[in-house]
Length: 196
Image (tube, rainbow, N blue to C red; front, side):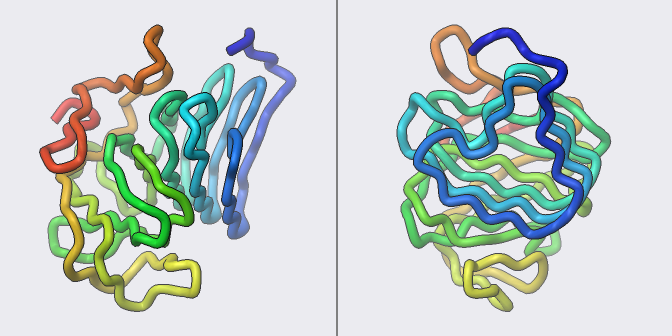
């Protein structure tokens, strides 16, 4: 990772963006800002690349983000006004990736096109410190052709507890692993992201 260039900015202010990536998906030599829209990312699978790669900061203040990819270079948002979560969770191409609130309602879901080891999610419905469930491989009602939906219900699949926060910071550690305030545990057990 080089020194951040303040003149470089990837800004997402709306639209419906779907990325199926072999290398870095969202890649800025400076900063990233997401204010609205829908951003869905699958990939990469190599640990030398990341679904989210920036050298400065990454802020989210609106919109829906759901990214799945490899863990080796995984980064999260560094801040913003909208809560987000980064967790270690694995799945295969063709499986649904779904975030569910405490009432069992789908907050955001799509179908991964590549195998993955991490999930980064944010949505306006996320509450600061809110507790959610990540469901991988379930059957999702009301999904579009790419599996995307922000409503309905999910049945079956593998569940992992997650939490959302807008105060968490996660990125690449010296060993190339993920880090986040509150720690992170693998799929199959509770993943406390944001200090829960």
